[in-house]
Amino acid sequence: MQRGPNDPAWRTIHTVPLPSQTQLRGLQDDDLPIFFTQQQEPDAIQMAAFTAKDPSDEAAFHAHWAKIRADETITLQTILHDGEVAGHIACHRWFGEPEVTYWLGQAFWGKGVATAALTQFLNQLTTRPLLARVAQDNVGSLRVLQKCGFVITGEDKGFAHGRNAEVAEYILTLPND
Image (tube, rainbow, N blue to C red):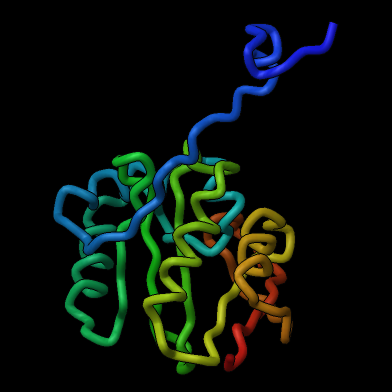
């Protein structure tokens, strides 16, 4: 017997989930408590490495975000996934050159959210070349950046509060089109 789309057994095996929605929008005040919770996730701290000195310091968190929000040179967006705040993405010039950075709550890892958000963000930005940095052992984030066209162009080391140690990182560049 040949199975096909009208056979319930075939449909069960071949069911494909509907694609989820990842969107970007401007930062809202209600996003900050979610970001604060996300920055305290132990696995995320370990993975990102370059984090706040004390992720549980709420006063330092709010001071940091007040500074970011007041800086008109920073492009900042909230990442939504299926209507939930998944994280944030930004472009800054903290080290001189334009650089992209993002953070996702751990519940959103491995679902294509970072790649979708970064792709949308890069479509909004006209700045090129654009840099990114990633801890060398953060394979997931490295893969996201490479899927979006970034190439490794250098290496650096820096003290990472998230690991309380010096950590090797890659510097990646999204070249001019």
